[in-house]
Length: 491
Image (cartoon, rainbow, N blue to C red; front, top):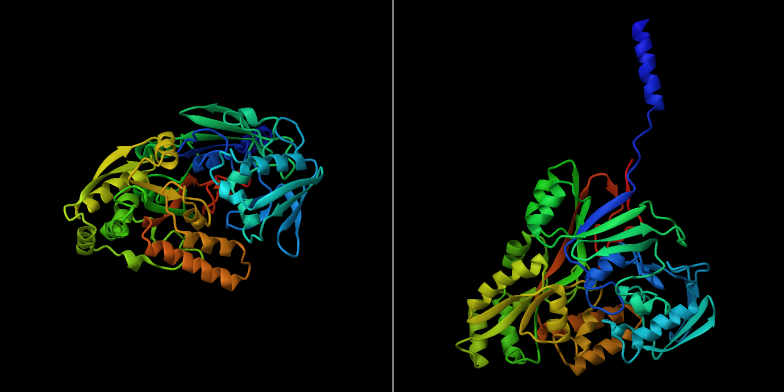
């Protein structure tokens, strides 16, 4: 009787005790903090890492597999000659401040991006736009000066998100978009907090809130993850620690690919890098695998041009700039630098740059090139190197998708000016036939490899460490983003 009573009491207790509530918030860490919060006026991918698809949306958007799908544009029609795109916008979409998102906002965003005084880091994406016309509140027509097979792809970039004139003044500190999460707070040097948007036009995300923590130091990243002070770390900066997480059932490790061509960029207009022989010598001085092993603990794929190896149109040109110390020395002597020279090597914060920079400095020293290393914070790097072009060498990973077109911009930070390449990219933009496009893309890869524009190092891998119960994180990074729209805790 007593035993039966105890069993009954226990059952009653179980029935009356509330189940543990499923977790509905997430703390996710990134290595780089954004310099500000306007993705349409800065080159820093760290802005997209927080805001892309979460706070801001474009006419189209990238999915985790790199495909381009409808975003704020529900559908579109393309004219027979390929120069007119008529977008039908989703009805009932509002910005986070309650104002309506309509065709006027699309016109404002595209006109602002392509304006003469535009601060958009990817202004070239919008150069082909001749006119943007509002047909009615949910219909906008974009007239191009020539057919552009990449136009819908271009509109998926973070630089092409739709913003409103009413909130543009304060966008760098208070971003107001149309996405599934609203911006709540930015404690600079520490975190950015987002909350679920109750008025979102699409499917509501499972998460009620998300906190992005910024942890730049690899050792601190490891400690925070091990202590479970954070739930996930996207782009984990200490690959040497991944085996420990893989062996721990509390965690999952996702290692994906990125669009990040990691390069030793050379200032093509600054002597001596205006000399092809010198650039060729630098390229032969580099031992890619040693850099991958030393800086990335084996994570990364060697590249010989500015193109992602997972792309079907990739051409393997690594053999063209194989590691060869004697060839590098001979090229330097031929260029008039038999005794070598000294240059600057300015490094942004990511560990691939800081760790890789020390290894590359030693490899260059072996052929007679001395480097003066300067470690820069991200904002400094953007100011000095990207905008100011005040550098000899730098290391950076270009995480934008299919961005070989940057070599057609003479004023881009590495200052490569080749009219033949510019013509080639113009032809590519006007070509829609897949076979012809593949041929042109192969030519483009070969041309910049032949010109040794930069030292091509490796395709950046993307390791994410997360609590084993989290579902829906992107494994690959087809664009720099931490898309939380499909993330949830398993029950």
